[in-house]
Length: 325
Image: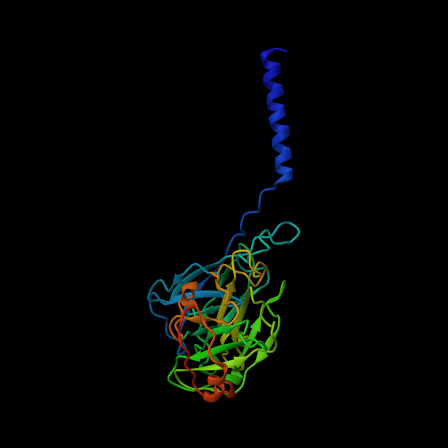
């Protein structure tokens, strides 16, 4: 065999092996081209929003935008919203984590990130890859603007058994009717799993206990829980009258815990999962930075003390220790 023939045979072998490897380990599809929304942003009175006002875009309570801001005195903004990578059969390339919006998902726009009181714009738009939406944004009515309530703590394996429970907190100076809110979970393949309507009144600067419906309503080794504002709608309603997620907590026992499915597991970081007799609680009451470091594991609060304080009755404040076990 001549040198030229040997070289040709070698190249052919490399090509065949390379093709076999490609078929065995196909390359993941690139992320879809982000959707762009741009225009001008206005406050509730019709004036331009100030320069550097944050403009954020949310799907199921997760910010998939590029940290954009109002750019000038004319309220000009431009925001990119990331999408979730899919193959040609419209199946996710990353079924263990939701990387962005899916085709047709409603995008909710806000002048902030819901870590504190946040204005929500009236306009929404379905997500579509690579499109440019020319759209002015207008802050929604005050009657459809949620208060910045938070999920303060989660007990998924109570020491005494029985149903799981959560704590909700109100950092504002006014009482908030809990009937305007509900708790909701995701389920594999859907943003709307189980939900629990709330009732009673949450007093200013207080925390309240809320029993969950079942001992296993949340997966103890990893799940996501959302606190959702029940939008009353009407004229100039925020988010086009859609319900608005004001807080979302994702927790996982480990990278191999049970929160390894879309859309429950997202680009948000996972807080640790509380074990038996433990609570996942915020390190400072009602403080939110959208980071897993907001939470730590503590000792489950005493149930009898809760009952004496009336915390499960819908209105009495409750304080629990931040003891870390």
